[in-house]
Length: 261
Image (cartoon, rainbow, N blue to C red):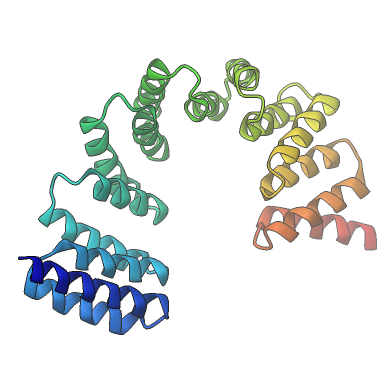
């Protein structure tokens, strides 16, 4: 048995060397053959690692499904599968596996939150709210759940409740860029308050300077109140971070066209 384990370890190490050197096809081929002979899921795990290294998400999902058949109680595999389904936009299957994780570990706020988030993406706001609340019942300071409850109110145009939630977030988690982002948008859209909108959105940018939509929303505020140069500069920063931000491109194009007339 010890000899067999030593052989498995040597093969695994060689597969890892192949993967780290970019020889993915050889690594996968050897791992597939080794699994066929041994039925050891560690070889499937290396196949998964090869696919992840190549950003082959659909193939990674397939191998995770295969791994779960051999280890049906492996919670880590289910978490990975749920995560990849989520990133691929398959929210129904993501929900299926997040629920399995939550059923097994209901007392972890991140599990309740992830399940709620999938319901949120699937437009089932009532169940999303329920799971976000479950997360907060476990940990009242779990900021992601609090933010997303605020977002539920925001999406329903219940701006007063949304503001109350986001202000609660920033009082307990003052480094939450999401809360400041939405407060800035609400101050512009609902309260027509230029000063507070700019203040909150600038705070969001300071906390998360790499999030392009912070700059886009700030540009919308500048544009609403006739600050043309500030609008242009902020849109350019947005597009520097996210060149495919179509709304920013359209607004910048419109302003540039108007200036040339």
